[in-house]
Length: 637
Image 1: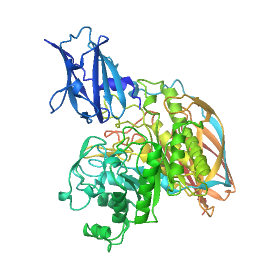
Image 2: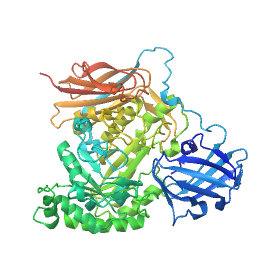
Image 3: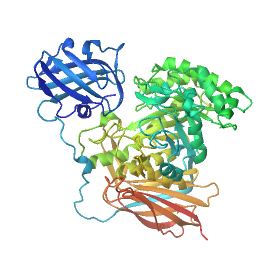
Image 4: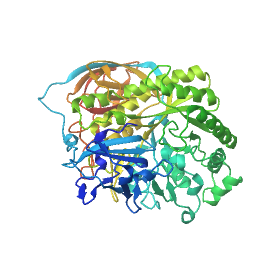
């Protein structure tokens, strides 16, 4: 996990560097992500400071000499922690400082600061708009949809969401700060989405979470230190609260068991607590906690990102495969009807030595007879793709093309599953995904990203990709629902939807059968930052179509990826000539970088519009620049 230096320089507290009688000092503040410091070194004007002359003092803790900070005796660095670095017996010199911080989670983090100024130029790109040189007419394209060209059946679970005990997602997001009640403002926004499935409680949090800490009377639940995110966890929100939320929303729960610091029998007890009748031991305990009826949780994830060195219980694929068998057997003994998700990885190439293909192969060989899904996660463009500044027009095209990579990964995983576990019916799950560009300069953590209209095109593009992958991909969860890479943002008293919320709201209209849509029109090329590949001849128009079994209703999704120009489209619907447009919605805004805020919560929003005009299956419709449009057609009245 390579973190760009311009991000690391934000750890330095501007203006804190001070010359002292016997050396100098400066301050750091963690505004990125929780970490564990296992080593520290400093260069001054290119020369290494002796470790006995370097010390670090975290807020509220005693000072530690650099030599004493080791893998066995680390320093936890939660988000928001301020630390003072003291150098003795070494002059400041010209003030060229290079800090080497060695972390358990991300390896070495190396960055430089300068005594004069901040060394990191101010970022203004976040408020720039793409240039509007002059008004031009619309582009032109053709779209043809055939009622008989069925790709596959869409599983509603691909429109799923994810919530984690991380920062203000649970406490202060979905629930009040103390976890005593659900927030009505947030709940109203979530309820409008009608989420089909919600993944809980993590994420990395799950790898240190013991579910029995979060049941029973709230006053009797033990508080714990969350080792994954270096935060205090009250356990005021736990299994019954989370499953109660799912029941209220009509969402299927998707629980992630702790295979990192947990054990198979602990996971099996959780299955029994959720699913046993009240006359069993665990069912009786659930009933005593006020929930006599079984929850009937069917989806269970065995671990999370086990391949990541930052993760509690990180291990190699062979050991995970054996661990997976032990957990799966114990959990299926508790309830044979559950469906199990194994931790896989998304391969970006077909090379035999691709690390993700190797991981997936070992997992499938070890436990392919026991699982129902093989999962992967993707955050694009990954931290390797973060830049201090971007060419915004090039970035726009890169973001819009990125979902094509996901289609390729899903296809690659499906072929590998078929080769190594044929006829098992194992499907692909994408149980964490999102666009994740570098956070803006003022962000309190790396998860405080400001999403724009452009990013909503990415979200819609992902959902369209899921439609095209319907035969292989049957479960997906956008990360995350509230305050963390957020679809919804809250403060203490208010909540608003970000642009990436609205494609989910609009796609509630979709039917179950995915149809092939042929598009002919203008295209673009894109670049390759981070884990996003370069693409050539990507259509500006991204179209999917869905219909019901009876052929009496069809829903079109049309994404105009062009940042500046409308596209006038000649639509042809074959085998659907009797259907007429009934409703339509469009998501747009003043420019691609438009974003919502507490002051302007609906600057980017979906609005209902007059549907396209079609007669006998033909018509012409103009789709606005940088927009998502959903059109419903039904049998004429």
